[in-house]
Amino acid sequence: MVLFREITRISNHSLALTTHAMDVGASTPFLWAFEEREKLLEFYERVSGARMHASFIRPGGVAQDLPLGLCRDIDSSTQQFASRIDELEEMSTGNRIWKQRLVDIGTVTAQQAKDWGFSGVMLRGHAT
Image (cartoon, rainbow, N blue to C red; front, top):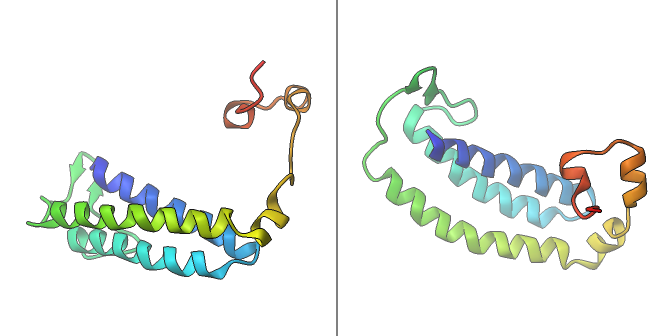
């Protein structure tokens, strides 16, 4: 169950981050990540028959055991995915257009964070 929650988390984060990249003018990271995301969705299809709204995890556990060979295939895919993540990061954060559109945008000082009542992740880097 934890394995598929992580697959879902990775799938969702890759979609969110690369649609953001597309919003600032970089379409290639989105297309590359979409290809990798497709592989993750195939794992859901193998366990439940559904891709987007998988019904594998249910109240009390899971619908059925994992198909034979699925864990091996997931492991193999994660090895490839890790190198793709590095490429996607470099393609995005190393891009001058990305930097021109995002560096120093929406910065918040430590005092502003306190004044505005920020908490959690919004306080990272503002430790006092």
